[in-house]
Structure formats: C-alpha cells, structure tokens
Amino acid sequence: MKLSSREIQDLVVLEPKGKIMGGPDASLLHDQLHEYIKQGKKKVIIDLSKVDWMNSTGLGILISALTTLKKNQGELKLANVTDKIQSLLTITKLVTVFETYDSVDQAAGSFK
Amino acid sequence: MEKAKRENNRIIIPSSLNYLREVDEFVEQKLREEGVSPSLVTDIAISVTEVVTNAVCHGNKNDCGKKVTVSLEINKKQVAVRITDQGPGFDPGHLANPLAEENLLKDAGRGIFIVRSLMDEVKFEIAPDSGTTVILIKKL
Image 1 (cartoon, helix red, strand yellow):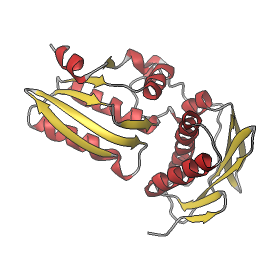
Image 2 (cartoon, chains in turn red, orange):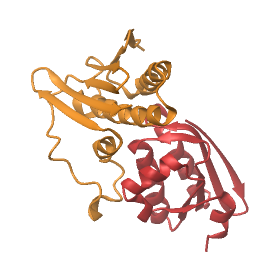
Image 3 (cartoon, chains in turn cyan, purple):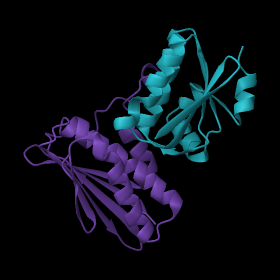
Image 4 (cartoon, rainbow over the protein chains, first blue to last red):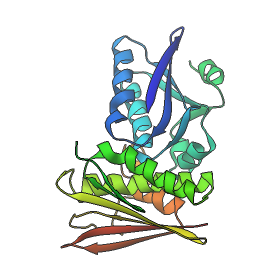
C-alpha cells in the first residue's frame, strides 16, 4: 500500500492506494494519522477510491484510525468506498460504525 | 530474507507477514492464468490473505523457522486453496462473534468470519502434531 495525503483548509484527506492487507506497511496510515493529530489536525477523510481491496486487517486499520481520532476529539469519514469494501463493511456491520460518502467533497461538507 | 519457495501451484513461505504480498501476487496470477473472473479472484485473494495471516501469527506465532504452505487446485468447477501451518491448531467453533456489540470496535477478530462469507466452503483439518490446514473452496 502507498499512502499520500493532502489538506483542504483544516481537513486532512488520506489517500491509500493499492491493497490494504497488513504486513510491513500496516502502520503507514496509523503513523501518518498520529503526525496529523500531533499537529492539531483532527478532521480526517480517508479517500478509498484508489484501494483495490482490503481484508480484515485493513478494516482494523480503519477502526483503529476512528478510535484514535475519537479519543482525541476528532472525526473520521470515509469517501469513495468501492463496492467490494462496501460489501465488507456491510457483512461486518461496520456500516453502523463509519460515516461514508460518495465523494471527498460530500465528506468535507459533513464536518461540524 | 529467506526466499519463498514456488513449485507449480504451491508457494511455501517462512512465517512472516513480509511474504503476504508475494503470496497474494502468486495466487492472483495463478487464478488469472486459469481465466477466473476478477471478482472471484478478489474474493479468493482476500480470503487467502486472511488465512495466511492467521497461519503466520496465530498458528506459527511468527516463527520464521516454521512454514506456511499455500497450494491451489483449479478446475472448471471450482478453486480449492489449502493453507497449512505447523501450529497446534484451534477450535473454529469457538471464535468471538465480530458482530456482537462489544466486538464491533475491535481492530481484529473478523478474518474467519469474512472468509466464511466470501467462500462457498471452508473446512478445517486440525492435527496438533502436524499442524492445521484450512481449505477454501469457491465454485466457478
């Protein structure tokens, strides 16, 4: 997995690319998120448009990001969830846990 | 780093998640060569990575001296993948329910559940002295 990020005003957009399956790059997103939290940037969108697929380790990475942000009074939204990831979120009931949006713009507009 | 061993439709890796990507690439390539549809390739690949992760971390306790073997049998009707570790085994009937409210925000514990959702059959052969084999079957 490769990870890039960009900022839109006070929002951070994280853009993982490839397959999120665990292994050596499992901590990339976690480490980047902690850097942003240290900088006081706690409104985060994860844009999943370039993620081919993820397994349960990938879902765990998203959950860890969500709980980390919540503990730090932050918010996490998911954007551009592919059909395969949406089906995994559904079968694992994680659709009840994450807010998902069809685009980064829509996700950005939803922050309080 | 020790190399993974590839033999026809089989790949054998030391027990490290550093080899996960290589296993995925091996499996996906074999499936594509046999004309398996992209959607099924994804479902099988996700499932294989789940089981290999469990074999490495839980079965073989990340001991690189122990091996995980992944072998594929592909015919016109189905794909069968066998993943074998050298661990003591586990009880697949006694796994925590990842859908339970108290488990929803846990960052682990969904692997077998997802595999059972994506595959048509999942079988376990557990022999404490000779490891655990998980067999994944997906009908084509």
